Length: 170
Image 1 (spheres, one colour):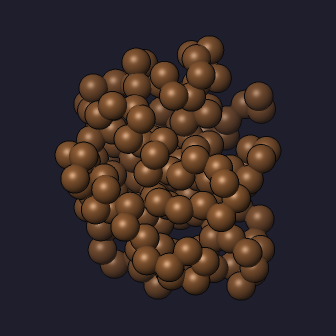
Image 2: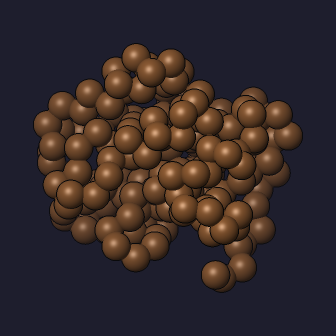
Image 3: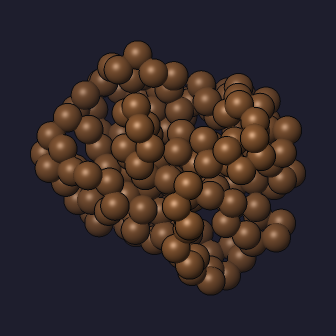
């Protein structure tokens, strides 16, 4: 695994700062007309420490941003991805530029399923924008997450920039 670039110093609770960092990740995703460019950052909110980052197609096999974050944690701890809930800190927070997907045309597990199978390891998700209805129609993932006790909060004021980055290549 390549060494990670230096991470920014973002103040605790600076949700816009973390979303800006997630947006930087999204911009690393290769643009294409058939997908969104999404960025994600997994944070230990107690220590204000970035645990991992990810962006769409960063890793092989049609990976989504959240999935890349989870795979990196799994690799670091030598665990299968579905068991990372055992090693994630108590107050792990996910920042993602676009709400987690609830339907995938590729047949891969959705990001909502990946989050829910961690059995409460991620209780708070900060989101930049709703998923545009271009590929899968209405995304009911937010409701599924909230019904499972996950708090989903939108970070306001960045929607236009996030949408522009997300739809690069469209």
